[in-house]
Amino acid sequence: MKLEDLGYNIGFEKFRIDNNLSQFETGRITAEHKERYIVRTITGEFEAEITGNMRYTAKSREDFPAVGDWVAVVTFESDFAIIHKILPRSSIIKRQAVGQFGEIQIIATNIDYAFIVQAVDRDFNINRLERYLTICNSSKVSPVIVLTKIDLINELRISEITENIKVRIKDIPIITVSNETLIGYEIIKATLEKGKTYCMLGSSGVGKSTLLNNLSGRVIMRTEPISRSANRGKHVTSHRELIVLESGGILIDNPGMREVGIADSTSGLENTFDKIIDLSQYCRFNDCTHNNEIGCSVLEAVEKGEIDKAAYENYMKMEREKAHFELTVAEKRKKDKEFGKIMKNYKKDMSKNKY
Image (cartoon, rainbow, N blue to C red; front, side, top):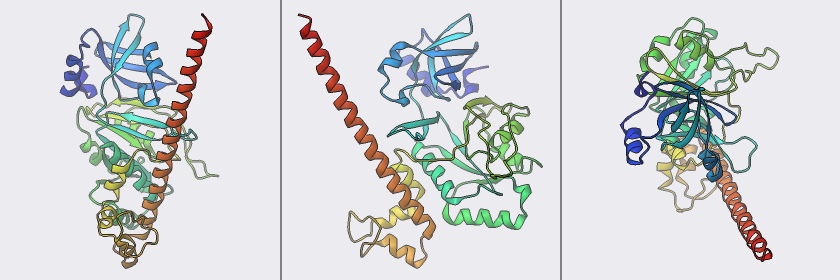
């Protein structure tokens, strides 16, 4: 297998040459298991760890490798490798880390397209679609909406759902598929380009792993039926994994996400809710919050029905989340800085006491 088959391009190669990394092999992270990685190079797959220096100098989780990363490695005959450097990422799909103060969780890197997967029978929610779309827009990843399980509803309901999406979300491709009858699979296969990387985003139980298994023609990810009592999916996929399909497309499956907290996504919100952003330029006050101000163009548009009320409410909710996340990040940086000063002074005092 050539590196180009894994998505390698001239940009990565230029960085490798310019930074004198010719003494290292180049590989791509295909899986991650608690800071141990699987790296694929032209010579095979290796279990890998990062160097102590990388671990010591890392300031946040973003400084650690993630599935999709291109890395400079030293490989050994025992199928083991040491990761020395992460090549610059062309894109990063990320969200707020669940239950962690001001932290970011990287979902995948160097992604070209994201399949936003929802099941039409139970999981369908336009607000959630807009959340995933915001993550994609902030990551500069092209989104494709994939609606699964269409065999469970009639064609009229499928048309209603797709039309409702188009009212709120403009110019995004929508593909409807059935993992049982394989209707729509020819369309989704036609979108898969050789050497391009696709990431699947969605809740548990929407059919991401089944979609991957069917596209690959073999059982790669274990699947289980939806819980009848809770009508919810199970987290069957427990890790991220990069798979090269026979068609040449590269697909990354992800564990289902029940919480989709946006992070660092000002541009993402602007692109997802561009109509609201455009109208905000005509508000009477420059610092208009679009809550209850007189002369707010956004509120006027909502009242006239020019902006969908549910879309407006979803935008306002995500704006509040973004502001809260930015505040927690700022507070965390402040605390880290203060702790750094304390440790520096402590070391200085300890050094003085030695003499």
